[in-house]
Length: 115
Length: 114
Image (cartoon, rainbow over all chains, first blue to last red; front, side, top):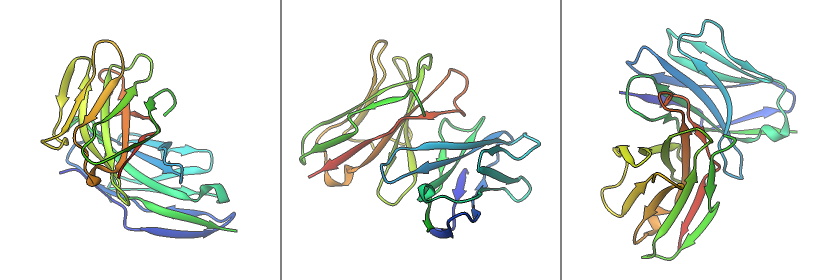
């Protein structure tokens, strides 16, 4: 079975501080992709970062980095130097290469950046 | 998600009416996926289509919902006789052939049923 778990319904972070959003996954597929999306109050899904299961290095995109621990099946998102505009819902998603045709999404984490 | 166009962005329907949601995939993409996001939840897969074919509809409700992706024109998600429980955000994604694990999402259509 494919499953994505985000255990933090809400998080707060002080502006300019770093924050880690947790994500664990479960899949029997040896090849898969892990994604993080940001959903602001306007509702669109904004792609942030991607990690392939066979990638040797953790993915980074600007202030976003993905802490990929394959043995623990975790793919935490780290946002450095938080900004007020980072306040949004954040979704972790997994796409197995060989199993099914869909992305599997977690239930999301609501991040609030405090000035 | 640049390039996947969904319209309308917001759609209001009364109970019993029909809702039609449109999705134009990114240029060069021949695979389309529809997802539904209920309030306070993550996205849930509904259906996967290629041109003129439904490949996987395992997430589609059995009644009132249908989807198509014609040879020409956008993909259409159709909801007949809408009920209040259909109120949700509906997202479309597209991918290249053979790259279904890399999907690009549109901005979504927010359906409100009065």
